[in-house]
Image (tube, helix red, strand yellow):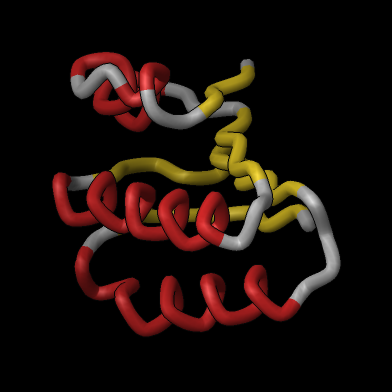
Length: 90
């Protein structure tokens, strides 16, 4: 399963994240890939929602990978040491 995020990722995306988690849970896929190439910015709530997505996906026996983070998004993932929790790919 591959999804792409764009623009900003904040608490305002909470409903979309719930839908994403439900879709991933119902899917027969073994892994979920979030493409962040078009994501311009993320705040702490957005980072927290990545953790919620990861917990749900891993709880279903699947894996989550974040791909193509750049700019401010890459910095936020790096500063918060997300690579210790979620696989991050260039």
